[in-house]
Length: 324
Image (cartoon, rainbow, N blue to C red; front, side):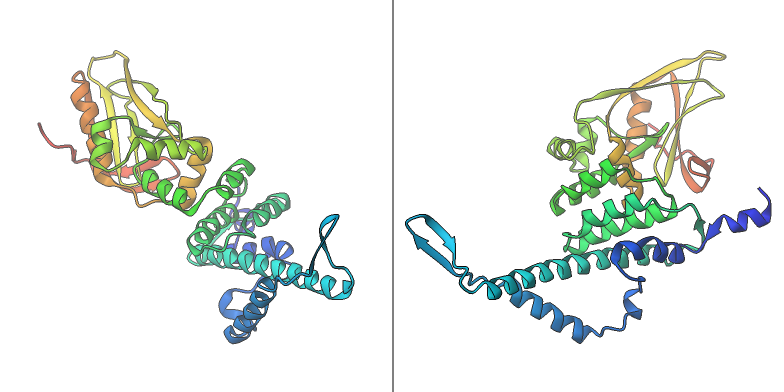
């Protein structure tokens, strides 16, 4: 692709966000600090809507046929119903715009993204999912997902949106805790299923089972297998440390296997969105355990300097595993 075509294929992430969300929120999106409505006016609007929500004196009539609504004052009841619906829409709109604000914050430091459009079907499904989300921390998670989809369309499936929609704040917090220990290899994300190591980092099996109920992990141990030679190592890593597992028998392929608790495809997508603060010592402990269990393999750990592409990396040549 020529330089001119490359420039045409990149756009401002903020401009792309505004274009993508305006149809879904019913107007041209403005960042929070640019909105014309003052905080005082917004607060007054909230108080009015809250009063409507709490107005529950609907006339109830008890007679021989059971419980009915007194419709003698139909206009008054219709007005209340209209007010109730108005409040619900105000509430939903506030939530949608709050999530969009969080996405805006995520994208402020990004210079360019692909000009590939975000699917309108995806956008409508997304905003249908967030319209009832009022918790600020949950709004931040959803904002990270929207920002991720703006950067790279088709990153988050409908299935992932539905799973997150059904999660509580407590379940999201458990996911943030556990995913901070995730290890990657061959497009898989997992935890090493070693009880001693997991206990050392306060990861209970109940946490893994809870995430399995959310559809983000598998609590059944699976075997992770790969082949290693002297020249072609198996690679496992997080954002800070890469482990290289090599065979030591000249010209021979050696099979490597260890048990893991894997994340599902939706779990992987959420990890990419949330970007948990990964634990460097955890992966070092895992590599040390793999070295202890596989004396015929060379297992080294290196600190990563930077990523070149999605999975290629430049790393410091010094082995940081402790000498035993």
